[in-house]
Image 1: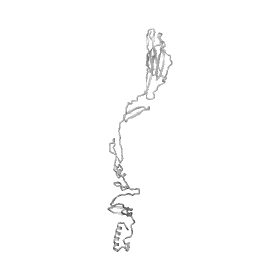
Image 2: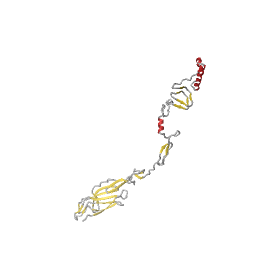
Image 3: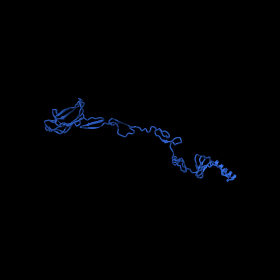
Amino acid sequence: MPFTTVHIPVTKIKPDGSPSSGYLAYRLVREMRDTKTGDVQPIDTWSESLDETGTARFNLPANDDPTTSPLGATYLVTEIVDRSFHQYEAVIHTDGEVETVSPESGPYLTELQALGPIDIVTLGAVSRIGMSASGVVEGTYENATVTVDVYGRVVEVSEGVDEGVASVAVTAPLTDTGTPDVPVLGIEPATIFTPGSMSTADKAMLDAATDAPTVSTLMRRDAVGGFAAGTATLGQAVVSGDLLLGGDANVGGELNANGTVGLFGVPSIGQQAGGAAKAGSSYTATEQAMLQKAYDALRALGLLS
């Protein structure tokens, strides 16, 4: 007689009474033979998913027909239900009873929960875990606006626009001769009234200023306020202190010296009092008159009093 086919409905219900979801598989682990007819049931697997009522239905060859050999053939039952995984061996009797003949192994996972954007994909007896797709396309974004969710995933990226420089505001002496998006900055030359840039020639002239008599340089006072000069040509000179000339002095105008004057490099001396009239009888009247004129001339020049 052929192998007896047994209809086996399997229903799985959650603790709250709602139907479970998942996958069941029965695998015949050894070949069975009908010793009377010679029929052979090869090793095979029957699998079904739980329907909306939590039920899977199988039509399986029984293991205990009287002429079946070997009588020890069993099914390896795999249940992946509500994300839990169980395995055990069972014998299918001709009366429809499913007898567990080996201890149930598992559950290997009591529960597999997705916390956050996690995908759990079950393929047969294997569950694969991965991050859910965020919808962002792989690539490089310029000037991008990025949105990140509470799990640290980039969930939105939008390509930005390089708007360049909006505007540049400058104050004197800075200048801007460019356009609003492409500024060209500069600086005005300095004047006697406003700050600004200095030419390299002016900078060199300032750096070369000295209190020594040096050709083609600016004069700079020394530590006591004095300076040295070579030949001096003066239109008018007013000297409030002593005047000592060691070189040439060409005065085209008036020279007023309120102090003493020394000429030809000789230190200045005090103005002398008196005159030719005080020379006494050493000179004749004519000589005295001539000396008086010379004396009067020197007084007129401010050299004598």
